[in-house]
Length: 380
Image (cartoon, rainbow, N blue to C red; front, side):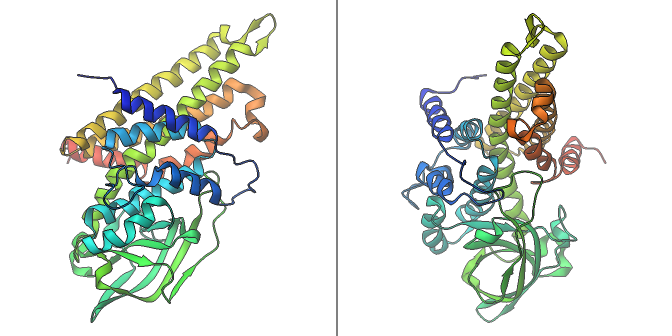
């Protein structure tokens, strides 16, 4: 078993870390989408990491392990996790379904724009009454000649207000349940689309989150991903990418938090000694390290299994569960290590717990991950 990264991968990690540290968010207002940072991430190559260069000059065609390592560097270096979250939704929940399931014509048309970040995509699946259960979508699509007509409303659409395209899932045959769902690419400028105001969230504030309404929107049949009825399978494949790659960013954030706690504990004095000498503090940091390394290894194993083209459902669910739960607990511990300072927003220590809390919900809740694990364990 080889636990080493090769020289190229380590160099890419260091480049990502250095690049991300230089991103400046100081002039942004609360909740504003950072357009300049998005452009910079596009030039860096974030959105094209796993996409073959034949479809875009911004594509790198990296394998998933290399992609994960680069994302870890971005997460560790970037102080605004929201823009990275928005980029992951764009890349892994939108561009990758097009890359893996779109027609050659659609790939040639859209991937150059998406891989560069020139155009932004949003994943439209969740609804007010259907989050984790794709078989219960109320958004409908029906055939009308060479077009499909889409009617319904989507909730919690990341990038909704800045999107040029939506990757949307709708019911095309109610009788077939999961096999009655179809995936579409929907240009955002089509008549009948109405985007609601961005939600005010607890964390990941620069990532825009919206409700989007589709009132009999006509989409050409060429914008179907795969074929009619393959939506559930396409969505599951995109979640495999997202649960590996999005959560690699959070491994990087936890690494940064750990290092900040170590630095603080080694310099903050209580009486005549640093607080690192108190076991209540040092043991808490040790727990942060154990959680981080455990989650990191689960992520690497899930990504390795995907690279071997084997069923990694249990591994990626275990990884996602471990990372999100560790992210929340480490965010709490980071505040406790910093004491009263950690409770102040101006310290920046609080941002991790606010960003972390959503991670137990999106990309499949922690409870859904446990269900997936139980299913693969053979529990009836």
